[in-house]
Image 1 (cartoon, helix red, strand yellow):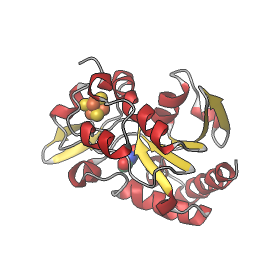
Image 2 (cartoon, rainbow, N blue to C red):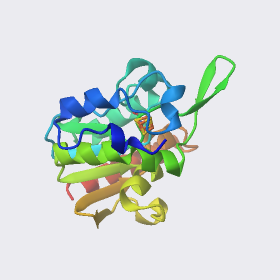
Image 3 (cartoon, rainbow, N blue to C red):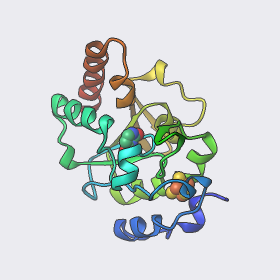
Length: 199
Ligand code: URA
Ligand code: SF4
């Protein structure tokens, strides 16, 4: 698999991109997942949020951020004064990566090779959505946009200028869901979003 490029109809509109993404075989992840989960939201949009990859629920339903991380994200966006309806939401990787444990499917972090393979879709989404600001949720999205040596822990809450894009970075909502001190993690996440949305 040589990456998504050969499946991406470059220069086309959002609907054509989404339609083409259903047939992507740019890496091995399409084999076990249910479907491609493409980004969603207004086109164009001032703000784009980029997550990691679809989870179990997203894979089954075919929509971004509809599972537990999505519920947390919805609440955090509302508390930060960001309207989800006016925001374009997508992921660095468009297929669910998991290992099967009995009947359960346990999420696995996508590998660098899969993030690179899938990047042509994200690049085209950015082209049609034309965001003034992108917020990367977590290290996978941050590295997809800012390069593999980018250190999220050193730069969370900041905006980076890179390849003509403005990319703000914070943690992934799943890390907040799992945090030992939930309240503190949640408040910090919302505080990042408040700072970034004004940036
Ligand atoms: N986590 C993500 O990164 N993206 C989703 O769409 C859902 C959960
Ligand atoms: Fe294509 Fe991305 Fe799915 Fe891999 S994860 S098959 S590159 S859409």
